[in-house]
Amino acid sequence: MTPAGMLLLIGCLCAITEPAPQTNVMVQPPSPLYSAQTIFASRPYQFYFLLKVVFSFGTLVHKGMETDFIQYVLSAENVALFESLLQPLTLMGAYAGSFLTYRLAAVPKAYLSSCMLCFHALVFGVGATVSKDTMRHTYIQTLTFLNGAIQRLLSVAFQGMTSDVIDYDRLVTGLDRSAVFVSIDHSAEGIFGLVGEPIPQFVIAALGYQNNGGCDCGCGVLCHLPYLRWSCPLDIGYACTRSFNHNPLFFGDPFRVPACTLQSPVVVAAIKRFYLVAPVIFSLTASMIALLFPIDANVSHEISIGHNCRKIYGWAYDPVERVNLAPIKTGTDLYVERAYEQFSKSEAELIRRDRHGVYRIVMIAVSNMTVVILCAFCVLYYAIVASHIREFAAMAITLVPFLALLAISWNALKVHAILRDRSLLLRGVLAASDNAVKVEAPDIAPELVESLMQWRRRSCHLR
Image (cartoon, rainbow, N blue to C red; front, side, top):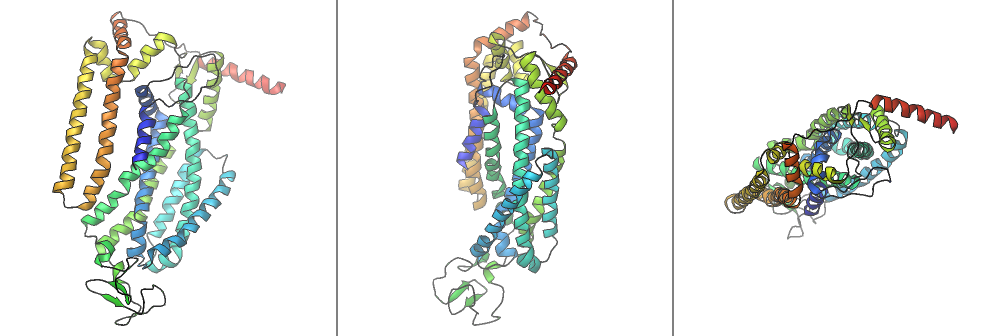
């Protein structure tokens, strides 16, 4: 998970840009904090990022319980064989979903995402109601196939929504930052997998989970004697060999459930809820978020018109926020504006109000880094030395250093930005003290849009 965390750190905080198309507007490369602040201030991206986080978290919680579900809920002794039989069904489902993407290419991506997420919740909701025998012999295969197809369709829909977000960001900022969006998009799954997968294990461990059912061997763990299928405190399975199939037991019921597939009823219920019920909850939540995504077909069309307005007139209209966009600034004005947009509104106001506000921000950032380091040290000390729960210690050792690195890097970039752009920030303080008036975009966007539409109609007629 560390590479994924570093990718997210690079994508959020570093200025990963691609060459912008040749236009009559000069586009300057953004600073790291400017990229992070403006990306997460975009309303379409906020909805998309929340949608992706919720769905990824639910998917990874379900995926982290797959092995335990097969062993302890379906009572499968040979877990590795059972999983290997399900993997081709996932690939077949993804292959079938690829054919459906061509049929559904014209469907709005947010609407497609919402429908697929509702269907995803329905599939797992039905699975939560079927019996154990039906699940093991029939429905687990159907669920795996449909899950593969839905995941494929959702990946295409999410990519379409990412393209809409990138187009909108380019209209508002004039920057082509597709690499930043794509890197965050792919890294979010790994980052929230870092949290999503250990949480169910931590919960079932607190409920009394015993590794391998409390048995010394069996269910894939090799026994030291050739005539043992499993060896548990309350049940020992004596047989001719260690084989799983066609190897009846000598004593007791020869076809009884292997003791290494048994857990307490509370643990079994928790595993079943994490595997089947959690995807229903997270998918329905993500479906409602997808319906709130502000870019539909009409807005996407207006964004493409806005790009042409930028190219021809310099002005544009924001179809999401319903405001006019001024021409993109160049030169010193651009750098002064971006120097302030690296910080939050309260921090920028502090810098403008007080000539010494720059140094106060530095002191606050250094204090934050010190507090983060002390808190991380205390949590790790408790996890390693004082805690007796191994799952909590493992999760803390994995998660706390990354979160501490993220917070320290963010504050360190603030200090670096202040030291680098100190002269520009002081220039903004002087401009504010002189009551500089900001030039707003005139209210001409509807006329621009109409004239551009007429020009496009004439161009199509000539063709």
